[in-house]
Amino acid sequence: MKETQGKLFGKWDVNVEVENPSLKQVISLTPVIFPHTFGRHAKKQFGKVKVNIVERLINKLMRGGTGRKVGGKVIRTHGRLQGKKMRVIKSVEKAFDIIYEKEKKNPLQLLIKAIENSAPREDITRVEMGGVSYQLAVDISATRSLDLALRNIALSSLMKCFDNEKSLAEALAEEIIYAAKGDIQNSYAVRRKDEIERIAKSAR
Image 1 (cartoon, helix red, strand yellow):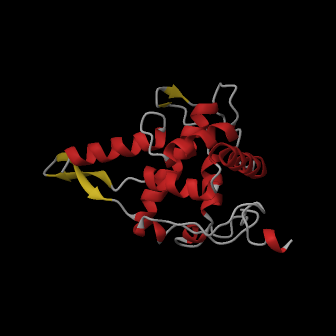
Image 2 (image 1 turned 90 degrees about the horizontal axis):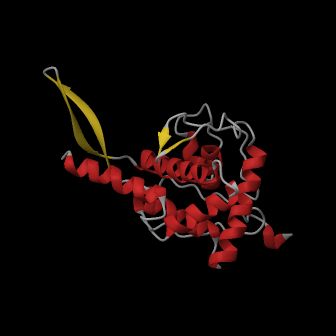
């Protein structure tokens, strides 16, 4: 029992390395066996910063369908995962098992690497001056950068398993592995980061 104490899902060590200094401040690696805080952070300002990073990914996966084209697909999941946190937690646990089988590395470390490779450093904002609006490149905060990375990893997983024989766990494992390697061809999250930074660069 002592061996699994503080390990994620009773298997994975949470003592992993975060190389990006800005993301290090907002990524929580609090030792938890079961990543579920029952929304205790919801009404606290910046409360989500203290929520374990795996639970934040789980929360992103519970989103409904966008109902619009994303990456060439119209995603309409009709909220099949909304409120079904236990189901998503099991999918994430299974995804971590798949990652370990394929890569023989701590899945949590690969998730952190995937987030670092998917987190944009610049974004654009719309500025209006004299009745004329234009786009301006701005530095992005660490919290928003992390949110975008998690959102794109989750969205990619939903797209890959939508109308497909692939399960959510398999799609998530695949996206984390590709993103951790910085594979711009196969990872939607890394490709989206590159696109955001490219647009920001042209708006400087």
